[in-house]
Length: 61
Image (tube, rainbow, N blue to C red; front, side):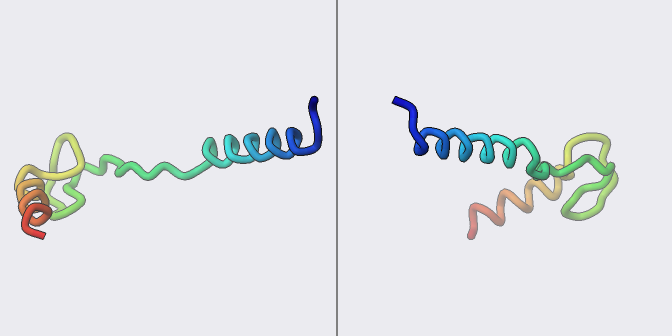
C-alpha cells in the first residue's frame, strides 16, 4: 500500500540526490605551485619537501 509517508520518503531522497549532485567540489585544483610552500611543481598539489613536512607533522601530533 502506497501512502503519504512513501511520498515524503521519495521526495526526501530526491532532495538528497539533487543536493549531492550540486555540492561544490572539495578537491584541491592544480595551480602549478605547491599549496603548502608555493614552490613551482609540474604535477600533484604538494612538493616533495612539503609532503615530508606534512607527514612528519601528522605523525608527531
